Image (tube, rainbow, N blue to C red):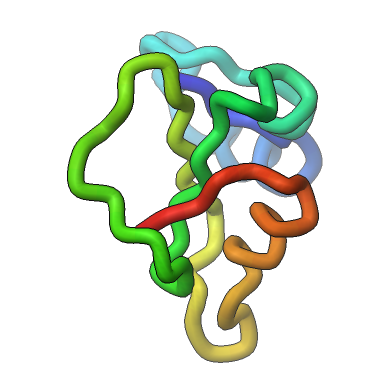
Length: 89
């Protein structure tokens, strides 16, 4: 499991909590699209028309840090489309 774009405010907030560095995770400053193969990525978004019923071996599923509603509606789907990666809900 990766936590990406781990810098700035996100890193500052996490540093307020003891023990997170012991989690079985990779903390990376880079964006997920810079460290994982684009063809392996599936961005999860409630706004996607693609239903995911089973998880595929070899795919990396991206869970965004924002909930896609209110003034952030569609942001995860747009990010997936901008990167040209698969998306689903």
